[in-house]
Picture 1 (cartoon, rainbow, N blue to C red):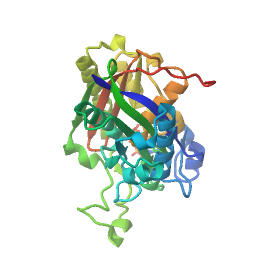
Picture 2: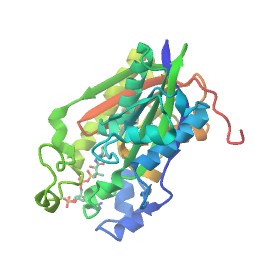
Picture 3: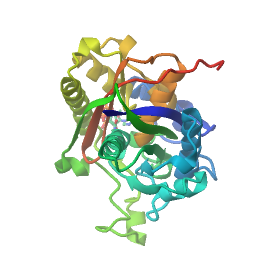
Picture 4: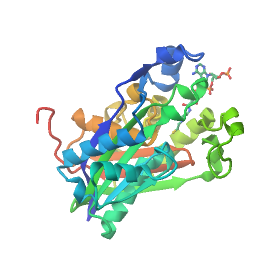
Length: 333
Ligand SMILES: CC(C)(COP(=O)(O)OP(=O)(O)OC[C@H]1O[C@@H](n2cnc3c(N)ncnc32)[C@H](O)[C@@H]1OP(=O)(O)O)[C@@H](O)C(=O)NCCC(=O)NCCS
């Protein structure tokens, strides 16, 4: 018995912000950004586009693809670090908007590892019999927590959403996972203000504590190590050798991180999915957006062995070994 993905969808803002545009805002260049990150452009939400609207649109597309009515969804999980508001959960807003009238709903925050964590939570619900159909959404508006005067972070992130519908399957599906956290590195990547420790005040705003802050070099080292070790652990638990992997879909934080991890896992570029150059780091949305695009590009077929890996603030990480089970319609179908 296992759990598989039966529907998928993504929603990204139409508005594209290029490196050149960012270079007109802060002291940077397209060449610096591309050489350090592999990012060329990212999507930025316009007024009216929020974590809720993007997540709702991705969720509806995933349900349509799965040919499942919202009324049949048992649980809505939204992985996000940029919720619509601190409360209620963005998941409840999406549950209501799509008409998932029987479903429970909650948000999950494991930062950029949130979607991969969510897959494991969905699997646990389904395997335990607590839910038959789980709608898992990763949705972020990182542009709303980025300090657009800080060149060391504002070049990295973007907005978007992806969603999957998960159900029981007899063969294939999620084979194994590897989840972890090291909270001793919490200060390396955080939004320090606006919570219980430092509630919002004029001072926290003057100190720019409502924006994301990061120690890029330390996070880089962590990211490569966490990606390699969690992917290797998930593959070992699934009984797969790296040679048997068909496609590696890592969190799209930075193309250099992805390439360094892939080298250590002995994966050639043909077995690694990359779209960070078009979207930047969309945090918990990056894996489902990448999965959707890998499917659209015909890079995934039934029986393929995939490893999805998320990593980020916490510090936290999660890898999922997934044997793909669904036939993927061609663009014409
Ligand atoms: C952020 C990152 C791209 C920076 O690349 P780097 O090669 O480590 O660069 P450094 O931090 O060593 O900075 C080198 C110099 O570039 C400067 N710099 C930083 N951002 C810059 C920018 N956008 N444009 C031009 N120069 C910049 C720095 O000020 C520094 O200057 P200094 O040497 O005079 O102090 C890299 O550390 C990284 O990708 N880290 C991981 C980030 C990440 O993925 N976070 C999310 C995880 S979910």
